Length: 298
Image (cartoon, rainbow, N blue to C red; front, side):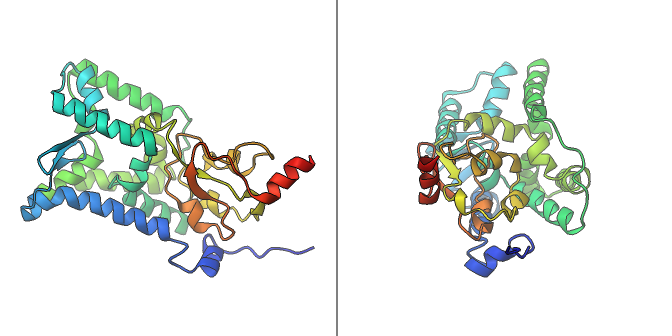
């Protein structure tokens, strides 16, 4: 009987793929997040107005309108009917995220994601307990509450405390109170709940998860028969409850991660030394040859 050596999370992938290969999607995400943030800062910082506005609403090259559909929805329930350009901008964003996966926003665009990832890294380094673990419905209840408060107060309620908006304003006008909100998110993830903000609280993530529930872009455990049970994918996944149905599925069951909670961050692909996971589309149910043979034998 051969006993497999247990390496620290990600180290086996680094040994097989090299450091860059084991961090490629993480690096691409940081580049993507920085790119989108810089687009909005080019105007106020350097006077280059390719994009005017923020992630809440913007106009690119003074032609293409883009509107956060969650902001638009709050405005509508608050009794403020949007202009046609805002509606068009929201429909464009809705279409994009409905196709590629709503929570791609959380992993590839949101500037708060590096803050919560840093808190998680420190949380693990310090060996802290998981802390409060929410029910699956908590984030949806907060989404509904946000819309209810908007309707009752006639305001876009989430924007009052939205750390994404506060961070953008802080980088333009000086951090001030924005620092307090960003630090509060960091401390919450560090000391109160592991992966707490994005996984437990943020109604923006809940909203985009609903939008992308039937999206095309998916991660698949296409080579799940090769899994060596190292558990690294579970360790790095910000929503690790989404992995088991695809990875532990019986022959004939889909290898696709179909949960709308998946952020398509690609970290499970990065840290897997035997290349179990890959990006694909929701209609691709193929599995590796070993599993197909086992299925026929059964």
